[in-house]
Length: 89
Image (cartoon, rainbow, N blue to C red; front, side, top):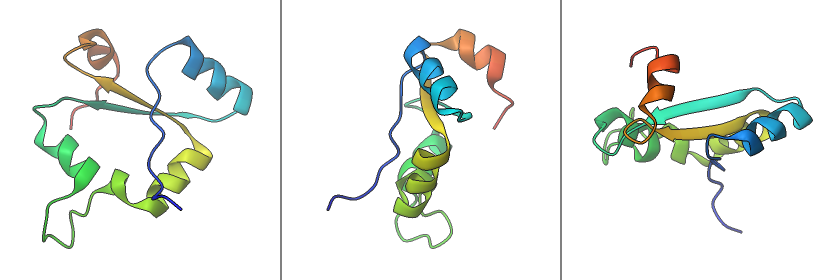
């Protein structure tokens, strides 16, 4: 059996429809290739017992996949979404 991973969707009507049909909230992750902390959330910091990579943790991924519709947005490709929803971080 493979390791559980977050099943990210792309921003769009299909993801919004899925959230509505399943009556689940959306978990929006706004990231960028140049964002250090985005990579930490994905993979963690090797050898650091605190920063272990939230999204790569199979238990966390299972919770996210079960209770949310996870959507990932690249801020460089969709600055409009970042401008509207990014609360800083």
